Length: 324
Image 1: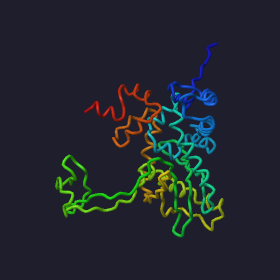
Image 2: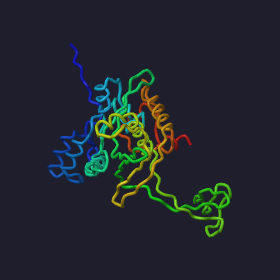
Image 3: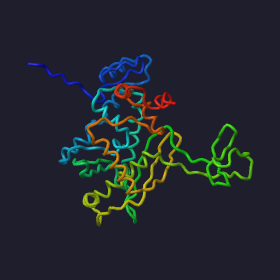
Image 4: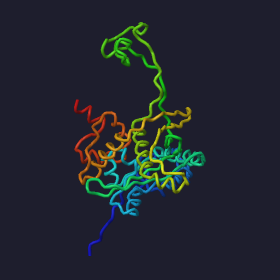
């Protein structure tokens, strides 16, 4: 009788910080306990990272319990669809240093979840049909507060590089933001202008939340709408409230806290949901990223080697440079 060998897939271990060789979680922890020469990690951090990794089947497990065929978390929908699929088909390893911020952020979130002024860390689900399949969307907003005009959503992001407001030069003739070209400050219509010219004014642009974070809280607003009755019953509200009145992203860093207001757009959230699921529900492997603003994802992708092998060439920024 033939022996069936099951090859593990998903995150199966770490890449050694010193040798960059793949090791199991247990081997990494044992090495850290022995002092790990040349490695910045200490045993407690390695243990915390390894024990904090959420099951890659988390959303699917919730889907199975609810009677849906497949489940996706809001976070999964916002990543690279191709990476999502490849991570479920191949084993991969990551450096502990690359995952340190995750466990650091978990500590922040755990502390902030003790706040009693609203509903914190409430996991919400929505089951619906799309492309002939029963789908479960899962999301856990960090904080939702019931205001007079609806729910207000706050999501925390721990980062070493928060967005900041800045002063930007504006061409008074065209009312367009200027950029620094080879000849100095340049207007896209008028060309280079003297930086001391009266044709240039400077205005303050508030910090802007990153696009994927905006999309995430908009998906949360949909989940809140679909869970209005559940929230009212669980938290003893006078009546179900479906409407979300606003949202913000709070970026937490050692430099300080940066709050960014977010505009909620229900139609855009539904369009995003249909578009992303339309790709992920297909049996075929999603295409490589072709949006230059998303190429950064390839630089941090743990399954990039598999992706490039299947693609037959480089992906991300190197692919664009090769084509040029």
